[in-house]
Length: 179
Image 1 (tube, one colour):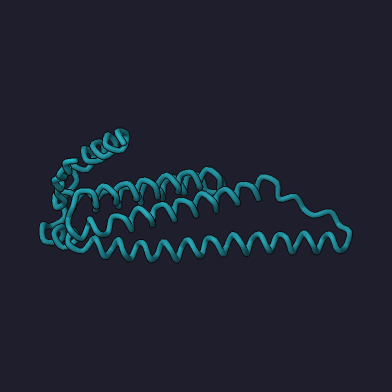
Image 2: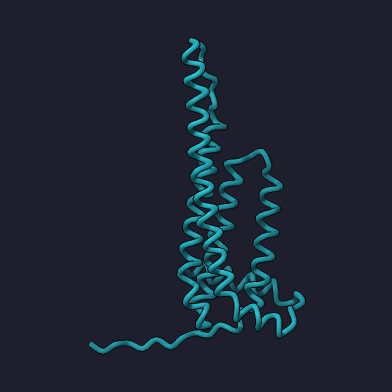
């Protein structure tokens, strides 16, 4: 967690000189980020289902082609590293989507009550999404530069908006229960 805190401070330092949104926009965004996160969870679940069915369809399609070749006594084409890379790409994206959706879902209650824990969870969900995207880009080498650039741009935009609303989320005091 110390790495995440250092990363948070670094990004916050980068964004300090950036122009800020008007105060009323930041306030509106901080008041409504909880339902935006809820929409993100719903879209993530739909995306995870889509990724799952795409992987299932691709697997069934490749099995069909292999059975077609086998029926005519022809050697099946080797999908080799492309098939493995595509499988790993889909697996990493699927795991990233599911983990990100779980973290965002955990953040909703805290975002609604403007607790810093909600903001921290959204930051963590953004980092998980960026890490999953970067890892999947490495498995899908066909567009390495574009994948890295799009991930960096998405991370920069997400960070900007997230750090714009950070001051509105306060630490909650924890009380220790006596035993």
